Length: 295
Ligand SMILES: Cc1ncc(C[n+]2csc(CCOP(=O)(O)OP(=O)(O)O)c2C)c(N)n1
Ligand code: SF4
Image (tube, rainbow, N blue to C red; front, side, top):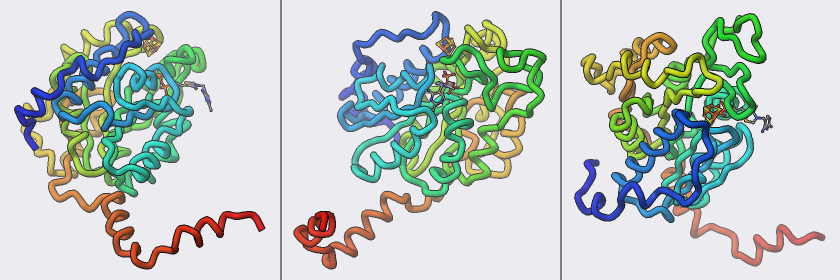
């Protein structure tokens, strides 16, 4: 749905900025990501109190606190189940999740396929800085092979996870990527992901300037990024998306890898239908309370 003039007039980026001052290291990519999120939310035009923003634990997981939406800086690796619960409890909320690559693909990795296949309408934004930032620079699941960190003194021997392939292979209906080096492009991908009716994923190459591979990553991104649109990529072609996603780690493709042109019904929508069907047969309130009374 195109951004309506009324929605643009209703909210501006500053309406989503909280009074908390970010405590990220100067130059951290997450500064740019939160700005892109403000822009995307303003374009969507929903009120801050209509939005729930959930995160796990990590530098990136501070993001909800820097917005005026309802926020829940929860438990390391558990943002997805909490966000799904919130959406099911109140399907009218717009639910976003902020995570790090460690939070999302290491400790929380087991939740990812189930969130994708369940297809609850939430947007999962992962700040993929290829390192554990908050805990001072340990190897993460997306760290490149050979990376020297405090837990890989002689260089990592492990192949990194490819988050783009991961999500496409699990069947995510929307998979995009961006970088704070292209703020407008990143805001657009986040906006489109949020508008997608179903589980959507945005991988953000958000540099950790303190523990990352080098501290000039934003400059490198600017020099090397290539928009998928400029390559003529058709975002409805899932196999072509997988082909391009294989470049993760070497190519910096930005934009939409895949957007299902025929989104299937979401879990939350199906649940509403089921509830409506079952409503006449629902147990009376007294009977339900009775079931929970200790005997
Ligand atoms: C159950 C649990 N295990 C470990 C930790 C320690 N811990 C906090 S954040 C973190 C990793 C942070 O890395 P990432 O998720 O990539 O986020 P970043 O800080 O890089 O944004 C770890 C291991 C924790 N808080 N809770
Ligand atoms: S440690 Fe890295 S990810 Fe964390 S705030 Fe500093 S630069 Fe950002």
